[in-house]
Image (cartoon, rainbow, N blue to C red; front, side, top):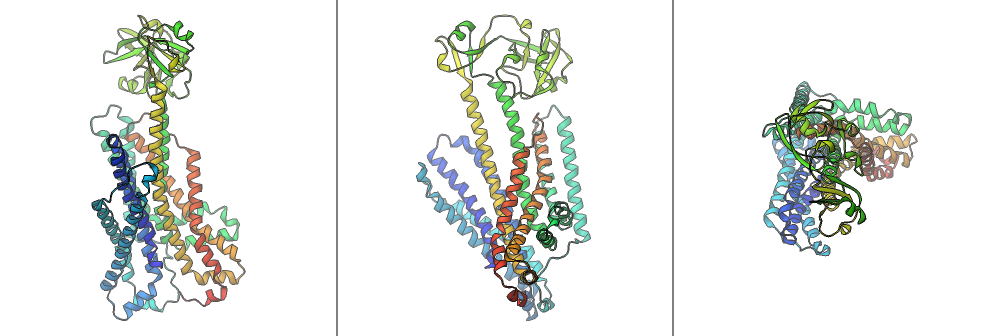
Length: 591
Protein backbone atom coordinates (compact mmCIF):
# COMPACT_ATOMS: atom_id res chain seq x y z
CA UNK A 1 0.00 0.00 0.00
CA UNK A 2 2.86 2.39 0.77
CA UNK A 3 4.07 2.39 -2.82
CA UNK A 4 0.78 3.98 -3.93
CA UNK A 5 1.02 7.02 -1.64
CA UNK A 6 2.01 9.32 -4.56
CA UNK A 7 -1.21 8.35 -6.34
CA UNK A 8 -3.35 10.79 -4.40
CA UNK A 9 -1.36 13.90 -5.28
CA UNK A 10 -1.16 13.01 -8.99
CA UNK A 11 -4.85 12.06 -9.02
CA UNK A 12 -5.87 15.39 -7.46
CA UNK A 13 -3.76 17.35 -9.94
CA UNK A 14 -5.08 15.36 -12.91
CA UNK A 15 -8.65 15.83 -11.67
CA UNK A 16 -8.33 19.60 -11.56
CA UNK A 17 -6.37 19.78 -14.82
CA UNK A 18 -9.10 17.94 -16.70
CA UNK A 19 -11.82 19.80 -14.76
CA UNK A 20 -10.44 23.01 -16.25
CA UNK A 21 -10.93 21.55 -19.73
CA UNK A 22 -14.48 20.50 -18.84
CA UNK A 23 -15.24 23.90 -17.33
CA UNK A 24 -14.17 25.60 -20.53
CA UNK A 25 -16.32 23.20 -22.57
CA UNK A 26 -19.33 23.85 -20.32
CA UNK A 27 -18.88 27.62 -20.59
CA UNK A 28 -18.50 27.60 -24.35
CA UNK A 29 -21.62 25.50 -24.79
CA UNK A 30 -23.77 27.33 -22.23
CA UNK A 31 -22.49 30.89 -22.66
CA UNK A 32 -21.32 30.98 -26.26
CA UNK A 33 -21.69 34.75 -26.50
CA UNK A 34 -19.75 35.54 -23.35
CA UNK A 35 -17.13 32.81 -23.68
CA UNK A 36 -14.72 35.12 -25.47
CA UNK A 37 -14.72 37.43 -22.45
CA UNK A 38 -13.54 34.58 -20.21
CA UNK A 39 -10.43 33.64 -22.17
CA UNK A 40 -8.17 35.36 -19.64
CA UNK A 41 -9.88 33.51 -16.80
CA UNK A 42 -9.10 30.14 -18.38
CA UNK A 43 -5.52 31.23 -19.02
CA UNK A 44 -5.32 31.97 -15.28
CA UNK A 45 -6.86 28.58 -14.48
CA UNK A 46 -4.36 26.85 -16.74
CA UNK A 47 -1.42 28.63 -15.11
CA UNK A 48 -2.47 27.60 -11.60
CA UNK A 49 -3.23 24.03 -12.64
CA UNK A 50 0.25 23.87 -14.18
CA UNK A 51 1.72 24.94 -10.85
CA UNK A 52 -0.38 22.31 -9.09
CA UNK A 53 0.93 19.62 -11.45
CA UNK A 54 4.51 20.67 -10.77
CA UNK A 55 3.89 20.57 -7.02
CA UNK A 56 2.32 17.13 -7.41
CA UNK A 57 5.47 15.97 -9.21
CA UNK A 58 7.62 17.34 -6.37
CA UNK A 59 5.44 15.59 -3.80
CA UNK A 60 5.76 12.37 -5.78
CA UNK A 61 9.55 12.71 -5.94
CA UNK A 62 9.72 13.16 -2.18
CA UNK A 63 7.33 10.28 -1.53
CA UNK A 64 9.10 7.90 -3.91
CA UNK A 65 12.38 8.73 -2.21
CA UNK A 66 10.89 7.90 1.20
CA UNK A 67 9.17 4.72 -0.05
CA UNK A 68 12.37 3.45 -1.63
CA UNK A 69 14.30 4.25 1.54
CA UNK A 70 11.75 2.22 3.48
CA UNK A 71 12.45 -0.74 1.17
CA UNK A 72 16.21 -0.40 1.38
CA UNK A 73 16.78 -3.85 2.85
CA UNK A 74 14.61 -5.45 0.17
CA UNK A 75 16.54 -3.64 -2.58
CA UNK A 76 19.86 -4.57 -0.97
CA UNK A 77 18.82 -8.23 -0.95
CA UNK A 78 18.01 -8.02 -4.66
CA UNK A 79 21.46 -6.56 -5.25
CA UNK A 80 22.97 -9.36 -3.16
CA UNK A 81 21.33 -12.06 -5.31
CA UNK A 82 22.63 -10.55 -8.54
CA UNK A 83 20.37 -7.69 -9.63
CA UNK A 84 22.39 -4.94 -11.33
CA UNK A 85 21.95 -1.27 -10.53
CA UNK A 86 20.56 -0.53 -13.98
CA UNK A 87 18.04 -3.35 -13.80
CA UNK A 88 16.96 -2.32 -10.30
CA UNK A 89 16.59 1.31 -11.41
CA UNK A 90 14.51 0.29 -14.45
CA UNK A 91 12.18 -1.74 -12.26
CA UNK A 92 11.65 1.17 -9.86
CA UNK A 93 11.06 3.61 -12.73
CA UNK A 94 8.47 1.30 -14.29
CA UNK A 95 6.78 0.98 -10.89
CA UNK A 96 6.59 4.76 -10.50
CA UNK A 97 5.44 5.31 -14.08
CA UNK A 98 2.61 2.81 -13.69
CA UNK A 99 1.61 4.55 -10.45
CA UNK A 100 1.36 7.85 -12.33
CA UNK A 101 -0.60 6.27 -15.19
CA UNK A 102 -3.17 4.74 -12.86
CA UNK A 103 -3.46 7.99 -10.87
CA UNK A 104 -3.95 10.17 -13.95
CA UNK A 105 -6.62 7.85 -15.36
CA UNK A 106 -8.42 7.89 -12.00
CA UNK A 107 -8.22 11.69 -11.84
CA UNK A 108 -9.63 12.15 -15.34
CA UNK A 109 -12.39 9.62 -14.62
CA UNK A 110 -13.39 11.55 -11.50
CA UNK A 111 -13.39 14.82 -13.44
CA UNK A 112 -15.62 13.33 -16.15
CA UNK A 113 -17.99 12.03 -13.48
CA UNK A 114 -18.10 15.42 -11.77
CA UNK A 115 -18.77 17.07 -15.14
CA UNK A 116 -21.98 15.07 -15.55
CA UNK A 117 -23.41 16.82 -12.47
CA UNK A 118 -23.40 20.28 -14.07
CA UNK A 119 -27.02 20.03 -15.37
CA UNK A 120 -28.00 20.34 -11.70
CA UNK A 121 -26.75 23.94 -11.89
CA UNK A 122 -28.69 24.80 -15.02
CA UNK A 123 -25.76 24.41 -17.43
CA UNK A 124 -25.32 22.17 -20.45
CA UNK A 125 -23.49 18.95 -19.67
CA UNK A 126 -20.09 18.68 -21.38
CA UNK A 127 -19.17 16.04 -23.87
CA UNK A 128 -16.07 13.90 -23.59
CA UNK A 129 -13.13 15.75 -25.20
CA UNK A 130 -10.95 12.73 -25.91
CA UNK A 131 -7.86 14.63 -27.03
CA UNK A 132 -7.57 16.79 -23.86
CA UNK A 133 -8.18 13.69 -21.75
CA UNK A 134 -5.31 11.88 -23.44
CA UNK A 135 -3.10 14.96 -23.08
CA UNK A 136 -3.78 15.15 -19.33
CA UNK A 137 -3.17 11.42 -18.85
CA UNK A 138 0.02 11.49 -20.90
CA UNK A 139 1.25 14.67 -19.15
CA UNK A 140 0.67 13.16 -15.70
CA UNK A 141 2.38 9.95 -16.81
CA UNK A 142 5.45 11.87 -18.05
CA UNK A 143 5.62 14.02 -14.89
CA UNK A 144 5.47 10.97 -12.64
CA UNK A 145 8.12 9.19 -14.71
CA UNK A 146 10.41 12.21 -14.40
CA UNK A 147 9.64 12.45 -10.69
CA UNK A 148 10.72 8.86 -10.03
CA UNK A 149 14.00 8.97 -11.98
CA UNK A 150 16.22 10.54 -9.30
CA UNK A 151 14.81 8.48 -6.36
CA UNK A 152 15.04 5.28 -8.43
CA UNK A 153 18.67 5.82 -9.43
CA UNK A 154 19.60 6.82 -5.88
CA UNK A 155 17.90 3.73 -4.43
CA UNK A 156 19.50 1.47 -7.05
CA UNK A 157 22.96 2.47 -5.80
CA UNK A 158 22.31 0.68 -2.49
CA UNK A 159 25.10 -1.62 -1.37
CA UNK A 160 24.30 -5.33 -0.82
CA UNK A 161 25.65 -4.86 2.73
CA UNK A 162 22.61 -2.71 3.51
CA UNK A 163 20.68 -6.00 3.82
CA UNK A 164 22.48 -6.56 7.13
CA UNK A 165 21.14 -3.36 8.67
CA UNK A 166 18.54 -3.74 11.41
CA UNK A 167 17.06 -0.26 10.98
CA UNK A 168 15.60 1.37 7.94
CA UNK A 169 15.91 4.87 9.27
CA UNK A 170 17.64 6.83 6.55
CA UNK A 171 18.38 10.43 5.84
CA UNK A 172 19.88 11.43 9.19
CA UNK A 173 22.63 13.67 7.78
CA UNK A 174 22.15 17.40 7.55
CA UNK A 175 25.43 17.98 5.73
CA UNK A 176 25.37 18.67 2.05
CA UNK A 177 28.32 18.26 -0.26
CA UNK A 178 30.56 21.01 -1.55
CA UNK A 179 29.08 20.84 -5.04
CA UNK A 180 25.57 21.29 -3.63
CA UNK A 181 26.74 24.23 -1.50
CA UNK A 182 28.29 25.91 -4.54
CA UNK A 183 25.18 25.29 -6.65
CA UNK A 184 22.87 26.59 -3.92
CA UNK A 185 24.94 29.72 -3.37
CA UNK A 186 25.07 30.38 -7.11
CA UNK A 187 21.29 30.00 -7.39
CA UNK A 188 20.69 32.28 -4.39
CA UNK A 189 23.17 34.85 -5.73
CA UNK A 190 21.53 34.82 -9.15
CA UNK A 191 18.10 35.31 -7.57
CA UNK A 192 19.41 38.18 -5.43
CA UNK A 193 21.15 39.94 -8.31
CA UNK A 194 18.01 39.77 -10.47
CA UNK A 195 15.86 40.94 -7.56
CA UNK A 196 18.02 44.02 -6.96
CA UNK A 197 18.28 44.69 -10.70
CA UNK A 198 14.51 44.54 -11.26
CA UNK A 199 13.79 46.65 -8.17
CA UNK A 200 16.33 49.32 -9.14
CA UNK A 201 15.23 49.51 -12.77
CA UNK A 202 11.52 49.37 -11.98
CA UNK A 203 11.69 52.09 -9.32
CA UNK A 204 13.90 54.50 -11.22
CA UNK A 205 12.43 54.21 -14.73
CA UNK A 206 9.27 56.28 -14.73
CA UNK A 207 8.78 56.41 -18.49
CA UNK A 208 8.91 52.83 -19.71
CA UNK A 209 9.69 51.92 -23.31
CA UNK A 210 7.58 49.28 -25.02
CA UNK A 211 8.28 45.77 -23.76
CA UNK A 212 9.98 46.84 -20.53
CA UNK A 213 7.16 45.60 -18.29
CA UNK A 214 7.20 42.16 -19.91
CA UNK A 215 10.99 42.04 -19.56
CA UNK A 216 10.83 42.94 -15.86
CA UNK A 217 8.15 40.31 -15.24
CA UNK A 218 10.27 37.68 -17.01
CA UNK A 219 13.28 38.56 -14.86
CA UNK A 220 11.09 38.45 -11.75
CA UNK A 221 9.87 34.97 -12.69
CA UNK A 222 13.44 33.76 -13.33
CA UNK A 223 14.58 35.24 -10.02
CA UNK A 224 11.75 33.48 -8.16
CA UNK A 225 12.60 30.18 -9.87
CA UNK A 226 16.25 30.54 -8.88
CA UNK A 227 15.24 31.35 -5.29
CA UNK A 228 13.09 28.24 -5.08
CA UNK A 229 15.90 26.19 -6.61
CA UNK A 230 18.26 27.53 -3.94
CA UNK A 231 15.73 26.57 -1.27
CA UNK A 232 15.58 22.99 -2.53
CA UNK A 233 19.36 22.77 -2.89
CA UNK A 234 20.25 24.25 0.50
CA UNK A 235 17.14 22.97 2.29
CA UNK A 236 18.80 20.34 4.53
CA UNK A 237 21.23 22.95 5.87
CA UNK A 238 18.39 25.43 6.54
CA UNK A 239 16.13 23.07 8.49
CA UNK A 240 18.18 23.13 11.70
CA UNK A 241 18.40 26.98 12.00
CA UNK A 242 14.70 27.42 11.23
CA UNK A 243 13.75 24.74 13.77
CA UNK A 244 15.86 26.46 16.41
CA UNK A 245 13.99 29.68 15.69
CA UNK A 246 10.48 28.26 16.05
CA UNK A 247 11.19 25.62 18.71
CA UNK A 248 11.83 28.03 21.59
CA UNK A 249 8.24 27.79 22.94
CA UNK A 250 8.02 24.08 22.09
CA UNK A 251 11.07 23.10 24.11
CA UNK A 252 9.22 23.90 27.32
CA UNK A 253 7.38 20.59 26.99
CA UNK A 254 8.63 17.05 26.52
CA UNK A 255 6.33 16.43 23.55
CA UNK A 256 7.53 19.61 21.84
CA UNK A 257 11.19 18.74 22.38
CA UNK A 258 10.69 15.23 20.97
CA UNK A 259 8.78 16.61 17.98
CA UNK A 260 11.55 19.08 17.14
CA UNK A 261 14.10 16.26 17.43
CA UNK A 262 11.97 14.03 15.21
CA UNK A 263 11.76 16.60 12.41
CA UNK A 264 15.40 17.66 12.80
CA UNK A 265 16.54 14.03 12.85
CA UNK A 266 15.78 13.62 9.14
CA UNK A 267 16.72 17.02 7.66
CA UNK A 268 16.77 15.93 4.03
CA UNK A 269 13.29 14.52 4.28
CA UNK A 270 12.08 17.59 6.17
CA UNK A 271 13.68 19.85 3.56
CA UNK A 272 11.91 18.03 0.71
CA UNK A 273 8.43 18.28 2.19
CA UNK A 274 8.80 21.82 3.60
CA UNK A 275 10.08 23.10 0.25
CA UNK A 276 6.87 21.88 -1.36
CA UNK A 277 4.78 23.51 1.36
CA UNK A 278 6.85 26.69 1.00
CA UNK A 279 6.07 26.86 -2.73
CA UNK A 280 2.33 26.73 -2.11
CA UNK A 281 2.50 29.23 0.76
CA UNK A 282 4.71 31.66 -1.16
CA UNK A 283 2.28 31.66 -4.08
CA UNK A 284 -0.71 32.24 -1.79
CA UNK A 285 1.04 34.96 0.22
CA UNK A 286 2.25 36.68 -2.96
CA UNK A 287 -1.27 36.50 -4.44
CA UNK A 288 -2.90 37.83 -1.26
CA UNK A 289 -0.37 40.64 -0.97
CA UNK A 290 -0.60 41.54 -4.64
CA UNK A 291 -4.40 41.38 -4.57
CA UNK A 292 -4.57 43.55 -1.46
CA UNK A 293 -2.26 46.10 -3.07
CA UNK A 294 -4.22 46.05 -6.33
CA UNK A 295 -7.48 46.31 -4.40
CA UNK A 296 -6.28 49.56 -2.83
CA UNK A 297 -5.27 50.91 -6.22
CA UNK A 298 -8.53 49.67 -7.75
CA UNK A 299 -10.57 51.45 -5.08
CA UNK A 300 -8.68 54.67 -5.74
CA UNK A 301 -9.16 54.35 -9.49
CA UNK A 302 -12.86 53.56 -9.10
CA UNK A 303 -13.26 56.44 -6.66
CA UNK A 304 -11.74 58.64 -9.35
CA UNK A 305 -13.85 57.19 -12.17
CA UNK A 306 -17.07 56.90 -10.12
CA UNK A 307 -16.86 59.57 -7.39
CA UNK A 308 -20.64 59.68 -6.78
CA UNK A 309 -23.81 57.68 -7.36
CA UNK A 310 -24.80 59.59 -10.50
CA UNK A 311 -23.17 61.69 -13.20
CA UNK A 312 -25.48 64.16 -14.95
CA UNK A 313 -24.11 65.60 -18.19
CA UNK A 314 -25.12 68.60 -20.20
CA UNK A 315 -26.45 71.93 -18.88
CA UNK A 316 -27.47 71.34 -15.27
CA UNK A 317 -29.73 73.15 -12.82
CA UNK A 318 -28.38 72.46 -9.33
CA UNK A 319 -31.52 73.76 -7.59
CA UNK A 320 -33.81 71.58 -9.70
CA UNK A 321 -31.72 68.51 -8.93
CA UNK A 322 -31.71 69.27 -5.21
CA UNK A 323 -35.45 69.88 -5.27
CA UNK A 324 -35.90 66.41 -6.82
CA UNK A 325 -34.35 64.84 -3.71
CA UNK A 326 -30.75 64.37 -4.89
CA UNK A 327 -28.06 65.18 -2.34
CA UNK A 328 -24.52 66.53 -2.49
CA UNK A 329 -24.98 67.93 -5.98
CA UNK A 330 -21.62 69.23 -7.26
CA UNK A 331 -21.55 70.98 -10.61
CA UNK A 332 -18.32 71.12 -12.58
CA UNK A 333 -16.77 72.84 -15.56
CA UNK A 334 -14.19 71.36 -17.91
CA UNK A 335 -11.34 72.93 -19.85
CA UNK A 336 -8.31 71.81 -21.82
CA UNK A 337 -4.92 72.70 -20.37
CA UNK A 338 -1.30 72.32 -21.41
CA UNK A 339 1.18 71.84 -18.57
CA UNK A 340 4.78 73.00 -18.96
CA UNK A 341 4.19 73.16 -22.68
CA UNK A 342 4.49 69.35 -22.83
CA UNK A 343 1.30 67.58 -21.77
CA UNK A 344 -2.19 68.50 -22.95
CA UNK A 345 -5.05 67.14 -20.86
CA UNK A 346 -8.61 67.69 -19.65
CA UNK A 347 -9.08 69.48 -16.32
CA UNK A 348 -12.18 70.20 -14.21
CA UNK A 349 -12.91 72.47 -11.28
CA UNK A 350 -14.51 69.75 -9.10
CA UNK A 351 -14.01 70.46 -5.40
CA UNK A 352 -12.48 67.28 -3.93
CA UNK A 353 -13.15 68.43 -0.36
CA UNK A 354 -16.91 68.29 -0.98
CA UNK A 355 -17.02 64.68 -2.18
CA UNK A 356 -18.97 62.32 0.05
CA UNK A 357 -16.12 59.91 0.75
CA UNK A 358 -12.41 60.54 0.33
CA UNK A 359 -11.19 57.44 2.19
CA UNK A 360 -10.52 55.49 -1.01
CA UNK A 361 -8.23 58.22 -2.36
CA UNK A 362 -4.57 58.08 -1.34
CA UNK A 363 -2.49 61.22 -1.54
CA UNK A 364 1.16 60.77 -2.50
CA UNK A 365 2.42 64.30 -1.83
CA UNK A 366 0.65 67.38 -0.48
CA UNK A 367 -2.99 67.46 0.70
CA UNK A 368 -6.45 68.26 -0.69
CA UNK A 369 -6.88 71.06 1.84
CA UNK A 370 -3.98 72.94 0.24
CA UNK A 371 -6.12 73.54 -2.86
CA UNK A 372 -6.80 77.17 -3.75
CA UNK A 373 -6.54 79.77 -6.50
CA UNK A 374 -3.66 79.20 -8.92
CA UNK A 375 -3.14 75.69 -7.64
CA UNK A 376 -3.55 72.33 -9.35
CA UNK A 377 -4.01 68.69 -8.27
CA UNK A 378 -2.40 66.01 -10.47
CA UNK A 379 -2.34 62.23 -10.56
CA UNK A 380 0.94 60.56 -9.61
CA UNK A 381 1.24 59.28 -13.18
CA UNK A 382 0.98 62.78 -14.64
CA UNK A 383 3.26 64.20 -11.94
CA UNK A 384 5.92 61.55 -12.63
CA UNK A 385 5.82 62.33 -16.37
CA UNK A 386 6.31 66.00 -15.58
CA UNK A 387 8.87 65.33 -12.86
CA UNK A 388 7.01 67.41 -10.25
CA UNK A 389 5.60 66.95 -6.74
CA UNK A 390 3.48 68.95 -4.29
CA UNK A 391 4.85 72.44 -3.65
CA UNK A 392 6.53 72.76 -7.05
CA UNK A 393 5.41 75.22 -9.70
CA UNK A 394 4.17 74.33 -13.18
CA UNK A 395 3.07 76.35 -16.19
CA UNK A 396 -0.65 75.87 -16.94
CA UNK A 397 -1.70 77.61 -20.17
CA UNK A 398 0.91 80.29 -19.53
CA UNK A 399 -0.05 80.81 -15.86
CA UNK A 400 2.31 79.79 -13.05
CA UNK A 401 0.50 77.46 -10.64
CA UNK A 402 1.58 75.47 -7.60
CA UNK A 403 0.97 71.73 -7.32
CA UNK A 404 -1.29 71.33 -4.27
CA UNK A 405 -1.28 67.51 -4.21
CA UNK A 406 -0.48 64.42 -6.24
CA UNK A 407 -2.95 61.52 -5.99
CA UNK A 408 -2.54 57.80 -6.61
CA UNK A 409 -5.00 56.27 -9.07
CA UNK A 410 -5.99 59.49 -10.83
CA UNK A 411 -8.27 62.46 -10.18
CA UNK A 412 -12.02 62.51 -10.90
CA UNK A 413 -13.43 63.42 -14.32
CA UNK A 414 -10.11 64.21 -15.97
CA UNK A 415 -6.34 64.35 -15.59
CA UNK A 416 -6.10 67.46 -13.41
CA UNK A 417 -8.16 69.54 -10.99
CA UNK A 418 -8.16 73.33 -10.94
CA UNK A 419 -9.71 75.81 -8.53
CA UNK A 420 -13.10 77.25 -9.50
CA UNK A 421 -11.61 80.71 -9.86
CA UNK A 422 -9.22 79.43 -12.56
CA UNK A 423 -11.92 77.98 -14.87
CA UNK A 424 -14.29 80.00 -16.99
CA UNK A 425 -17.64 79.13 -18.55
CA UNK A 426 -20.87 77.46 -17.48
CA UNK A 427 -21.16 74.06 -15.75
CA UNK A 428 -21.31 71.16 -18.23
CA UNK A 429 -22.27 68.48 -15.73
CA UNK A 430 -22.76 67.55 -12.11
CA UNK A 431 -22.22 64.72 -9.64
CA UNK A 432 -25.02 63.75 -7.28
CA UNK A 433 -25.97 61.07 -4.80
CA UNK A 434 -29.34 59.39 -4.76
CA UNK A 435 -31.58 57.16 -6.86
CA UNK A 436 -31.46 57.46 -10.64
CA UNK A 437 -35.25 57.56 -10.76
CA UNK A 438 -35.22 60.90 -8.91
CA UNK A 439 -33.49 62.71 -11.75
CA UNK A 440 -36.03 64.97 -13.52
CA UNK A 441 -36.77 64.32 -17.17
CA UNK A 442 -34.65 66.25 -19.63
CA UNK A 443 -31.32 65.46 -17.96
CA UNK A 444 -28.81 62.90 -19.28
CA UNK A 445 -27.82 60.68 -16.37
CA UNK A 446 -25.52 57.68 -15.86
CA UNK A 447 -25.47 55.42 -12.81
CA UNK A 448 -21.86 55.24 -11.62
CA UNK A 449 -22.74 52.98 -8.70
CA UNK A 450 -23.78 50.09 -10.97
CA UNK A 451 -20.57 50.28 -12.98
CA UNK A 452 -18.47 50.45 -9.83
CA UNK A 453 -20.19 47.42 -8.28
CA UNK A 454 -19.74 45.42 -11.50
CA UNK A 455 -15.99 46.07 -11.54
CA UNK A 456 -15.63 45.33 -7.82
CA UNK A 457 -17.48 42.02 -8.21
CA UNK A 458 -15.33 41.03 -11.20
CA UNK A 459 -12.11 41.76 -9.29
CA UNK A 460 -13.33 39.85 -6.23
CA UNK A 461 -14.27 36.86 -8.39
CA UNK A 462 -10.85 36.71 -10.04
CA UNK A 463 -9.06 36.89 -6.68
CA UNK A 464 -11.32 34.17 -5.26
CA UNK A 465 -10.56 31.90 -8.24
CA UNK A 466 -6.82 32.49 -7.86
CA UNK A 467 -6.82 31.80 -4.11
CA UNK A 468 -9.02 28.74 -4.53
CA UNK A 469 -6.71 27.23 -7.13
CA UNK A 470 -3.63 28.02 -5.06
CA UNK A 471 -5.18 26.17 -2.13
CA UNK A 472 -5.18 23.18 -4.48
CA UNK A 473 -1.39 23.47 -4.43
CA UNK A 474 -1.44 23.58 -0.64
CA UNK A 475 -3.78 20.57 -0.56
CA UNK A 476 -1.28 18.57 -2.60
CA UNK A 477 1.46 19.77 -0.23
CA UNK A 478 -0.59 18.52 2.72
CA UNK A 479 -0.84 15.15 0.97
CA UNK A 480 2.96 15.17 0.88
CA UNK A 481 3.09 15.92 4.60
CA UNK A 482 0.68 13.07 5.29
CA UNK A 483 2.69 10.55 3.29
CA UNK A 484 5.96 11.71 4.86
CA UNK A 485 4.53 11.45 8.36
CA UNK A 486 3.02 8.03 7.68
CA UNK A 487 6.28 6.61 6.40
CA UNK A 488 8.23 8.24 9.21
CA UNK A 489 5.93 6.46 11.69
CA UNK A 490 6.59 3.15 9.95
CA UNK A 491 10.34 3.68 10.08
CA UNK A 492 10.29 4.60 13.75
CA UNK A 493 8.08 1.82 15.06
CA UNK A 494 10.79 0.65 17.46
CA UNK A 495 11.38 4.21 18.61
CA UNK A 496 7.65 4.58 19.32
CA UNK A 497 7.76 1.34 21.27
CA UNK A 498 10.66 2.59 23.37
CA UNK A 499 8.79 5.82 24.13
CA UNK A 500 5.72 3.85 25.16
CA UNK A 501 7.88 1.52 27.29
CA UNK A 502 9.39 4.40 29.25
CA UNK A 503 5.99 5.87 30.07
CA UNK A 504 4.62 7.85 27.12
CA UNK A 505 0.85 7.33 26.85
CA UNK A 506 -1.02 6.72 23.62
CA UNK A 507 -2.45 10.22 23.65
CA UNK A 508 0.97 11.74 24.22
CA UNK A 509 2.46 9.67 21.38
CA UNK A 510 -0.41 10.82 19.12
CA UNK A 511 0.25 14.47 20.05
CA UNK A 512 3.94 13.94 19.28
CA UNK A 513 3.22 12.73 15.74
CA UNK A 514 0.68 15.48 15.00
CA UNK A 515 3.08 18.11 16.37
CA UNK A 516 5.78 16.85 14.03
CA UNK A 517 3.37 17.08 11.09
CA UNK A 518 2.38 20.59 12.16
CA UNK A 519 6.05 21.59 12.31
CA UNK A 520 6.43 20.70 8.62
CA UNK A 521 3.67 23.19 7.88
CA UNK A 522 5.08 25.94 10.11
CA UNK A 523 8.60 25.61 8.72
CA UNK A 524 7.22 25.62 5.18
CA UNK A 525 5.04 28.65 5.99
CA UNK A 526 8.01 30.65 7.32
CA UNK A 527 10.08 29.83 4.25
CA UNK A 528 7.09 30.70 2.06
CA UNK A 529 6.72 34.06 3.78
CA UNK A 530 10.40 34.80 3.23
CA UNK A 531 9.94 34.21 -0.51
CA UNK A 532 6.34 35.29 -1.14
CA UNK A 533 6.29 38.85 0.22
CA UNK A 534 9.51 40.08 -1.48
CA UNK A 535 8.40 38.67 -4.82
CA UNK A 536 4.92 40.15 -4.47
CA UNK A 537 6.62 43.53 -4.03
CA UNK A 538 8.85 42.79 -7.01
CA UNK A 539 5.83 41.88 -9.17
CA UNK A 540 4.13 45.17 -8.24
CA UNK A 541 7.27 47.06 -9.26
CA UNK A 542 7.58 45.07 -12.48
CA UNK A 543 4.01 45.93 -13.47
CA UNK A 544 4.74 49.62 -12.89
CA UNK A 545 1.89 49.97 -10.40
CA UNK A 546 2.16 53.25 -8.55
CA UNK A 547 0.81 52.15 -5.22
CA UNK A 548 2.61 51.20 -1.98
CA UNK A 549 2.80 47.51 -1.09
CA UNK A 550 0.04 46.50 1.34
CA UNK A 551 0.61 43.21 3.18
CA UNK A 552 -2.68 41.81 4.55
CA UNK A 553 -1.30 40.86 7.97
CA UNK A 554 -4.54 39.28 9.20
CA UNK A 555 -5.00 37.16 6.05
CA UNK A 556 -1.36 36.07 6.15
CA UNK A 557 -1.75 35.04 9.79
CA UNK A 558 -4.87 33.05 8.93
CA UNK A 559 -3.03 31.24 6.12
CA UNK A 560 -0.14 30.29 8.41
CA UNK A 561 -2.46 29.05 11.17
CA UNK A 562 -4.68 27.19 8.69
CA UNK A 563 -1.65 25.52 7.15
CA UNK A 564 -0.35 24.47 10.57
CA UNK A 565 -3.78 23.03 11.37
CA UNK A 566 -4.02 21.22 8.02
CA UNK A 567 -0.58 19.68 8.27
CA UNK A 568 -1.18 18.71 11.89
CA UNK A 569 -4.45 17.13 10.78
CA UNK A 570 -2.53 15.25 8.10
CA UNK A 571 -0.66 13.53 10.93
CA UNK A 572 -3.79 12.31 12.74
CA UNK A 573 -4.09 8.95 10.97
CA UNK A 574 -0.37 8.14 11.28
CA UNK A 575 -0.58 9.19 14.93
CA UNK A 576 -3.48 6.81 15.57
CA UNK A 577 -1.57 4.00 13.90
CA UNK A 578 1.53 4.67 16.00
CA UNK A 579 -0.53 4.83 19.19
CA UNK A 580 -2.19 1.46 18.51
CA UNK A 581 1.12 -0.42 18.38
CA UNK A 582 1.90 -2.17 21.66
CA UNK A 583 5.35 -1.48 23.19
CA UNK A 584 6.29 -5.17 23.13
CA UNK A 585 5.39 -5.64 19.46
CA UNK A 586 7.19 -2.43 18.52
CA UNK A 587 10.38 -3.44 20.33
CA UNK A 588 10.43 -6.78 18.51
CA UNK A 589 9.91 -5.24 15.07
CA UNK A 590 12.79 -5.09 12.62
CA UNK A 591 12.55 -2.29 10.10
